[in-house]
Amino acid sequence: MWHRLIFASIRNSLPYVRFKSAKKAIQRAIKLPRYLGSEYRCPICGVGLRAFKPIWRSHTRKVEQFGYVYRHAELETFNREAFSCPKCDASDRDRLMAIFLDGVLPSLTKSGGIRLTDFAPTDPLSRKISRNPSIEYRTADLYRIDVQDRIDLTDISYPDESTDIFICSHMFEHIPMTAKRCGSSTYFEARRIRTGAGADRRRRR
Ligand SMILES: [Zn+2]
Image 1: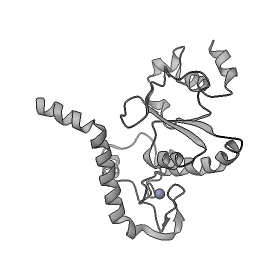
Image 2: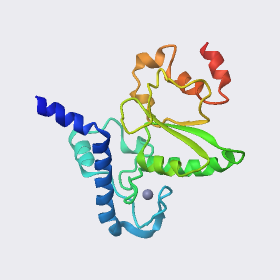
Image 3: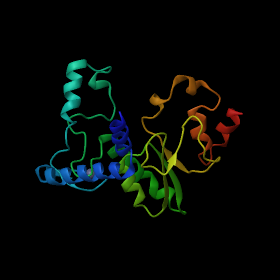
Image 4: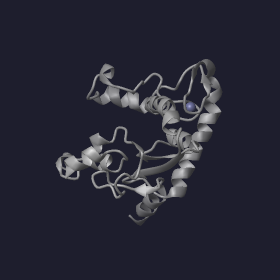
């Protein structure tokens, strides 16, 4: 029993999380040459590729074994055949977000720096955003230990209008329905912390 607790505490420690991340980066670097080419470019790390990596094999095996709640054609940003970047590990969802941010950030940062909060950040997108000197970037999550702020999306501890942009992708489906319906709902909380969201704050009251 005690050895399980020790192992669990090691697995949940920041050094272990960082070690695992570094190990995966080395494994990707070793396999990268087989993907290099000029047909595609990753919008996050900029590498030229002949193909992105397909989804991991165990996912495909489990879908075949248990089925999937949605048909593949119904999914958005879940390209199983071209899922992740072999260099930076960005998923197709990360890459789409990066293209969107590349389009809107230049005009938003033209007149000065902006504050961007990323809920449940992914490493590739996080690294890209962190490199932008015009962005005051914060990361937040309810459970993860490798973020700056421990945040419950149904009761966010940030003050009103404390961020200019927030990223909250594929999060709402994880919020219990009771929390979605209560007064301090995730939607209003997220709107409350964003600058220029006064109309929504009035509705909340
Ligand atoms: Zn990449």
